[in-house]
Length: 500
Image (cartoon, rainbow, N blue to C red; front, side, top):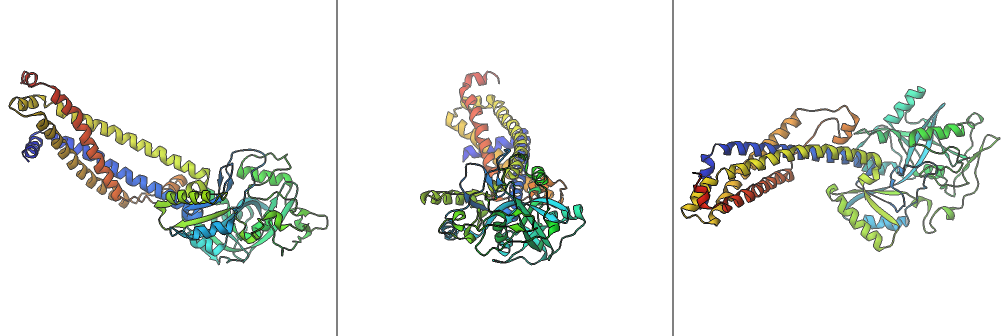
C-alpha cells in the first residue's frame, strides 16, 4: 500500500504526467473509433451480399476451379467450365436441416442467357430459384410490383437495374405480365424459352454484380440448359422470331459482359449450362425441334429433375459463427465422403467481393499504421520519463530501497498512467463515434456504399472495441515499464548520486 501511495504522489508531482495521459488517451480514442469504422465496413460488406444473394453459408459441389454463385471464376479464354450439380442433393439438404444453427435454406441453379426484348439483346446471369422462398431469405430485396411465383409455378423476376437498362435501350418499361424470351447457346444451336414477368424488385444496397442478375423459376432454367423434365413440350416460334440473334452477335454480347472468349471455337459453352446436343436448333419450318432427353443421363439415378441444383444457400442464426459452421459442415461432408463443399458468403460472392475486401483491408492497414506510429511515440515518452528519474532512483537505493521496491513502484506508476489514459481514451472514442454517427455522413460512390452497407455511415462502439482499447493500454504499461526499470536497476546508487 505504501508503494502505491508513493507512486501516486510521484505522478501528481510531475507536470509531464498530464501530457502523457492525454497523449495515450488520444491514441486509444483513435483506436476505438477506427475499430468502430472497421466493424462498420465489415458488417456493411457482409450485409451487401448476404441479404441480397449469397446468404451466410453456401454449399456447392467440389471443383478444380474457383466457383462462386456466378459460376466459374477462373479468368480464362475459350471453353468455360461446366457447373457440376450437388450429389446427393436430398441427403445433403436433410443434413443441413438437422443443424440448429441453420435457420433456413434455399437452392439455386446458375446459367447465362440472352434476354430479348423487341430488337434489344441483353446478356444476363440467371439464378434459378424458388421465388417466394428465395425472397423470404434475401431480406435485402424489396418487391416493388407484382407477386413472386411459388413452388412449381413459372415466372421471371426483374430488378430495377435490368429494367432501367432495357428501358434505355428499347424504350420499353417492363411490368408484371410482360412476356420475355430467354436464349441460350451450346455453340452452334440455340435453346429458346419464354417467361412471364411476375415481379419488379430492387436491392436495398446496390452493387454492380446485381445489375445483370435475373431471377427465374428453376424449371424454366433447367429447360433452357437442357435439363428437361419428361413432360416438356416443344416450343414453336413465329417465323419473324426465328432469326433472333446472329451467332457472332451472341458471342459478342457475352464477351462484353463476361470477358474474352474464343468465338471461333464451336465448343464454347457457358458456365452453368449443360453441354448437350439435345438443345433446340432453328429449322426452316420456323419451329424449334427438340429430341427426346434421356433423364438418366442428366441426373443421378436416385434423384429427379426437381433435385438438380448447383447450390444450397443457408441462413444461420448467428452470422458471427458462420466460419465455425462452415468448418463443421466440411468435416461432416468429408466424413460421409460427399463431393460437396461449404463456403462463406465472401467466397460465394466471387472476385468482386474479394476486391471490396482488399479495398477495405488497405483502408484498415492505413489506419493501423497511423495508430501504430502514435503508440511508438507514446511508448518512447514513457521510457524517457522513466529514464529522467535515474537520480531519484539512485537516491531511493541509497537510503535503503531494494530492487523489488523500485520495480514495483515503477510498475504502479506506469499502470496508473496508462489505465487512466485508457479509460479516458475509451470515453473520448465513444464521444467521437457518436459525433460521426450524428454527422449523418452520406456516400455517393458505389464502392463506398458497398463498403459501408448503405448510403449513410453507421458505426457502433462495441464491448470488444472497449476491451481492445484497455488491453492495449495495459500492453503499453508493460512495454513502458520493462526497459526503464531495467536501466534504473542497472544504475548503481553511487553513479546516480554522483549526478545530484
